[in-house]
Length: 143
Image (tube, rainbow, N blue to C red; front, side, top):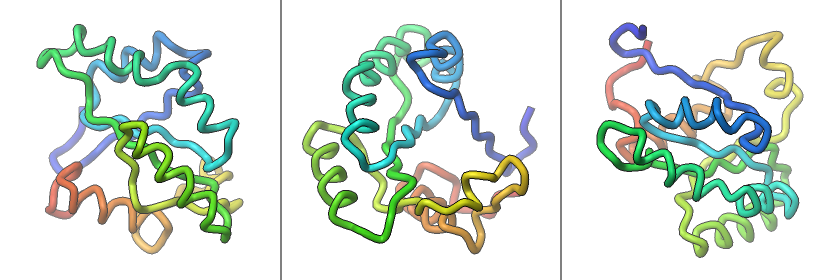
């Protein structure tokens, strides 16, 4: 159970290997975020699985009968913005919601199990702000 003002983040792993876990989480989630690097192979995974069908199929299992809001977060980005712009446009043209915020490829984030990363002051700060602005997170301070 979450206390008022708290949010939970669940990393389901790879949907192709953990379909039952992903389905269980999607049944109760408010927002599904697909994390992907802006590379052809990672974007191909979104299309090839196909993730849209997995997300849409869970609608029948949810109380409201609707799939969760779904957004794509481009992560492990480098200083080159060409791939980010190209894949953001490609995904939007394919009908996906894509965050403007990106998460850079930093070892600190790759090792976040060893040392937790908080949103404030990190690359995730921009993501939290964007999510609040889009109504995906409450405007009030989170615990």
